[in-house]
Amino acid sequence: MVDIAPFQVRLRTPIDTAHGPIESRRGFLVAVEHEGETGVGEATPLGGWTESYTECEEALNRAQTVARHLDWGIALARTNAPAARHGLSLAFSVARARSEDAPLYRSLGRDERVERVPVNGTVGANGSPDVTATAATELVGAGHDCLKLKVGTNGVETDLERIRAVRNAVGDGVTLRVDANGAWARSEAERAISGLAALDVAYVEQPLPADNLDGLSALRDHGVGIAVDESLVAHDIETVLEHGAADVVVLKPMVLSGPDVAVETARTARAAGVEPVVSTTIDAVVARTAAVHAAAAIPDVLPCGLATGQFLETDLAPDPAPVENGSVRVPQTAGLGVDQSHVL
Figure: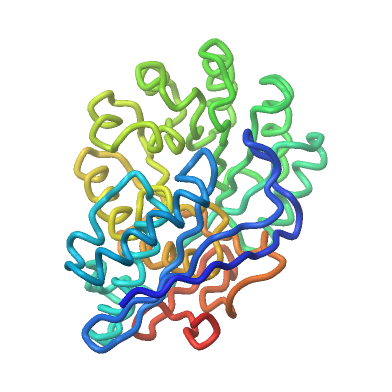
């Protein structure tokens, strides 16, 4: 059995992207039955990262038919509709975890009990150095010891001024990361990395466009780690690793087609000496909590980009994984931890 229901949640403030502002997130709840248990998943497509809303709906309808007549192995096969596969895979995984009386992260392969996962705070790309430093200081005051600073919209020199102001404000004990979202040309990235190294920035995320794996590889070993995010939309993990394009990979389960694939990708990266970080695509509570479980399934995971529930004005159910003092609580109940009575 597969049931599909559309939903929409509103953002508190529109988020500007290369594909236009996002004011809400639309997707589908997916419910499946397995071994006498019902599991709920979420498929929330995002333009530029996954298939479109219409393509996601079509893929879910096809999977619904396949699951009715064939088996789950075929229904869960990876397709070019990662958000749809995420919803199906998550629902199936939650039902299986409930049947095992285990939290999802245990079902994903982590034997030890995990209470919390560290998370980074995020500061937007706009704002003067003083405004940026104030926002960063507030996040540190709320318990974050790792900050991700968005850059790439105001020029390299302005961004370096902003990062310098943050470093001066928060001191040396706070880890700083920078995310350029592929905005820089090679010469800009080289100039930025030189300045960021002097400010003890841990890594810069996607300093070059997603396709430029050779360029990303050439930027490594210059005092600042190189992380890829959008590159995992354009390439599979094996290709990224073959090009030596990353020190860190940012794993979005919705983009990768499921929390199971995110954990598998993390293991592949780790085996090659590349560190994984788990993030979201500003999802509703079902997918967001699944990302928390995926992160919990990765031993000694670095601070992750999971403090995204704050961006939503409305949601599907109460959040079972709140962010407190720089970390997110991992639900320990069987399955996902989200109250399914709110979403079924």
